[in-house]
Image (cartoon, rainbow, N blue to C red; front, top):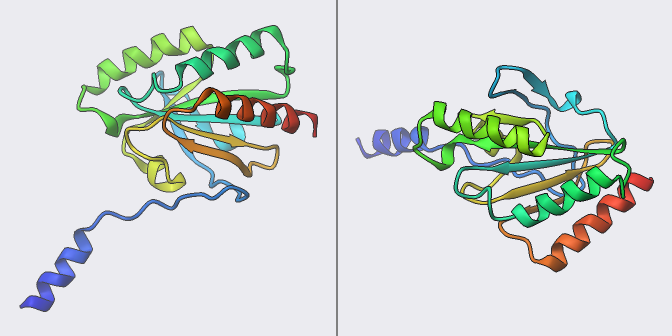
Length: 172
């Protein structure tokens, strides 16, 4: 009887996150935005790709960095033809109804001019090892290898280091 309870308990455990390590190629994904348009990793063609994985409560953790990168992109200080950003909305972070989250996403997409994809089931969190309740930032190079990963608020010093890495990757 005890053996059956142990086996049943093991079967009900959630699968652990498959955290991608810096230097590894990231796995492909298939997600839709709030309008239903499908995206995969191959949908993003530019040399460098920022991936932001955030939810309702964590999206403000690195707003200052998003604003800084938006200025760099708009002024072409680092050629905008070489890099892009994509947001992935973490629906697991809140109990807010999906239709409200979709409205917020559409508004954010207009403001940032970047696609925001929807991770409704938490599959991306497990696949790439994102942390729930945190602003996750992954920077991918042209071969879609992970070159930077962070979870939580960045200091100004860390933000400057990340921007320097972006400059270096766009020159390669």
